[in-house]
Image (cartoon, rainbow, N blue to C red; front, side, top):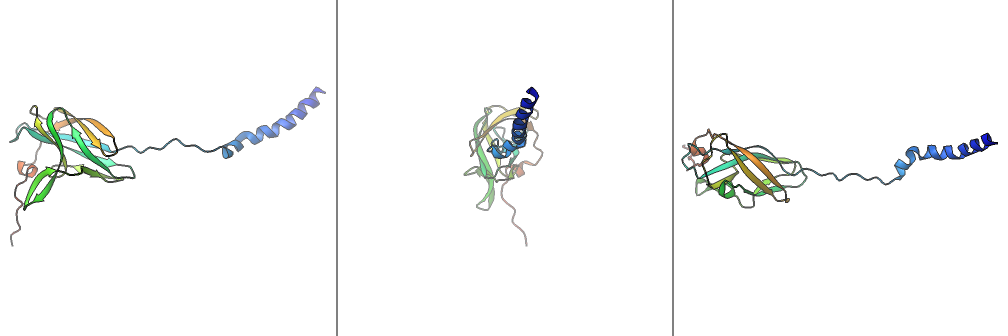
Length: 177
């Protein structure tokens, strides 16, 4: 009698157990963890040494910014405790001369692309330096982006090997016929 009762119980329970294996996976609502794309990635950052330059009160920081996201992001500002003033600059043609000026609106980092901050191009300008910077020093810099993110960096100081004119260009040569 016990065996018949046990067999009857198994006959009822076994199909329920088997049907619940895997079947509930397709009926349960699927939930996924939120996928977040990292903000702007900062690579190859460096600051130009001031030791040996004509003007030791200012320098610039250069780097590569990569935006893996689906929306454009801009570098909107930067700060550093080694400088009295930090601005985002660009090189632009003005009255026939190449000049360095503050970049209105910040530096755009296009979606799924990159921006390179380099000598004679966009850069982070450090002005009113509190001390000379020599190769091997490190400079703290905080970058602020339009998406609300910030990056705290410790940036190495490197020798600047290009001629001074390339960093602070003067008159653009006119082509000769």
